Length: 321
Image 1 (cartoon, one colour):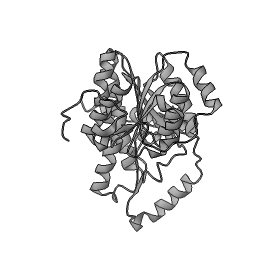
Image 2: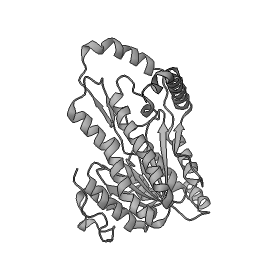
Image 3: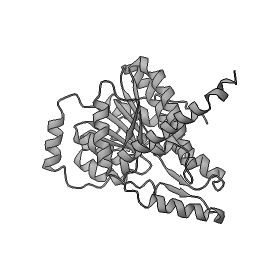
Image 4: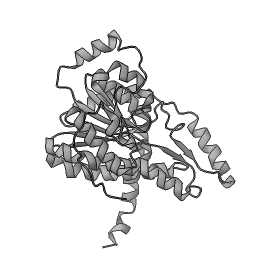
């Protein structure tokens, strides 16, 4: 990867996009307008501003969990920089919250663009308080089936995208002496599972990087929380999905998986957003949090099984010294 050469470019008037590169264009006016915020939204916002408004930087903000996070933050009276490859789905939020919302067209796989975009986000509102690495994609297929191009593209979004954003925001948060980086992982990061092995691998890499980041950033007053959501009603498995070319030898296993997954029910992303608001309000937030009862049960069971496996082979392990 090429190292960014301009991590802190000079501030500009972000309502004038003429000077910006296409990959990091920020705007509040270029999108079509819709009716203004409802009375309910206005009441919620007014009631929420009992503290200083925070500034959020959210990747993958145009749909799914990212959209829900942006809506919740804005309704709470905060300011948001919503970043995505395509920001047009956020047109209604622009109309409702124009003074507190900036949209950033951004491909998180482009490290230089990420550094430029973060600098412009800071210039827009003067600081960053909550950074949510939510941009992600799904890759479904057996390990034998995935192509090199699919794996590299997948890791570029799920792992390297979050890494580039984390690197870009940390100097600003360190200088402030505060800030909270939220890494959206997955319940699937806890274990390799048939047909989602490479997705789990990308999220597992994010989990371990985030654990290191939490230790490294703590002394500067910067918090890191790894969020492992269960199933939510998003477009991750439609718009954000890549499928491998199926090898017929796995047809029986695929049938078993289809029967297993057919019984699952996804939750409303608004529930995850409400919990995230509570987490970022905490003086001592968790470094790792599971979202959803089914996800919690699955990960807890896996943790118990791992401890039992380690204990079972303790004697043999100790012979390795």
